[in-house]
Image 1 (cartoon, one colour):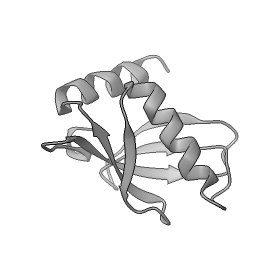
Image 2: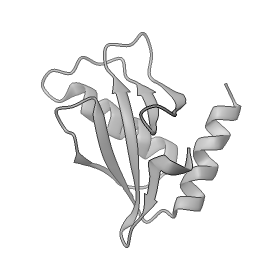
Image 3: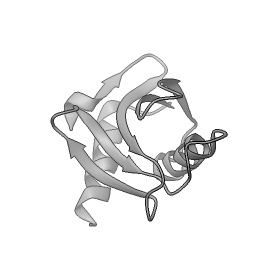
Image 4: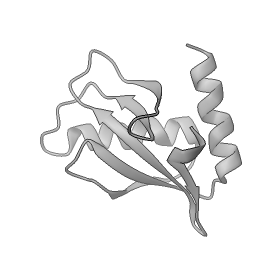
Length: 100
């Protein structure tokens, strides 16, 4: 999971593999092949609905501002979580994965 996160001056960037049109919104876990955190969103990828749902989910999860910095029209995305360290982000992601 560590490989999907990178600390920057602004916060932490996270590589995501996003699946739209899922039955429910959920964090699936770490995809070793893609070196990304897998996330499923229930919204369709039309009109920015899936991206908006993803941003809201991550904002709620991390409690910090989140923005897509790469891959707005792709299922492979990079998001920036502002004001969060890599260690803090990993702890949150691991806690969510354990709850499953």
